[in-house]
Length: 328
Image 1 (cartoon, one colour):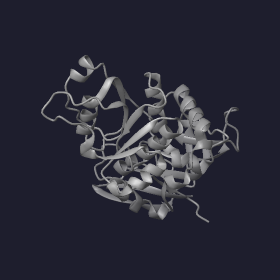
Image 2 (spheres, one colour):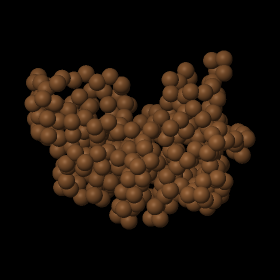
Image 3 (cartoon, one colour):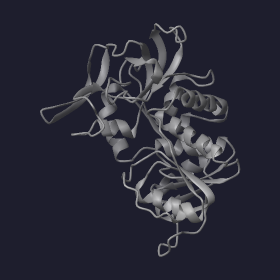
Image 4 (cartoon, one colour):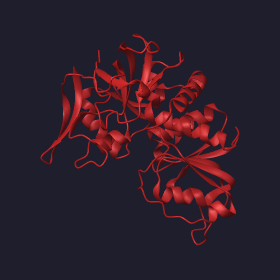
């Protein structure tokens, strides 16, 4: 089969489309014919020299995919079942979804709701899963429709999908972006306002900023997350799922003990079966309210994945990049 392979041998990094032989790794592996996969920031990290994310010297990339099961020993996952696969060490420590077929253990598999096609499932992908998990986490914290929610990295995968889902659920998302030229596009996705990266908080000479946001979805991390924490309203929360701006968080205890704010961690890698089911069910519930087409930045073949990874690494996307392993 054709696949996009990342290899680093003797300090030399290579990547590109090639022929590989798919093989099962775990006893409960299921084979899925891939209709689409998506390009994620994590994929870009895997495809870097001396990557701290990639766990094998050579593997098929792609941390998520969607398609139909072709081989399975699990009576609950029969041939023909439409599924999304993501999480665990897929595309990191074992062959991933940038291929015509992929073997995955059952714990990485989510049966798709009828309302979601395999293509739309990869418009959603790991990014959209994180976005919806963030919305559900904020709701579990007590936020209700109508609240103004800040979304950072708004033109990226998680950000643009978070805005779309929040709007579909009745919230008022405010988009924070370093790409002001995309303001109209973000408003079309549901953003009630668009602000710059430096407009998240104020009063830099004070410990706390003005109380501005009922909640926030952050996929940036670093100082951006610090600024969100200091500008949340009393009892507010931020759902954090990214580290584009860095892994370190330098902040103070004041937002937590004087405004009772909360920092909610969002994980799409080791999410439990219960969490996966809940998130995909929620996505199926709002699918009819979402136009997925404008969320696709572009669709690429396996031979174009390397260029797509560089675009994602530079933060130059507007929505999601889909990979079609068998373009017609």
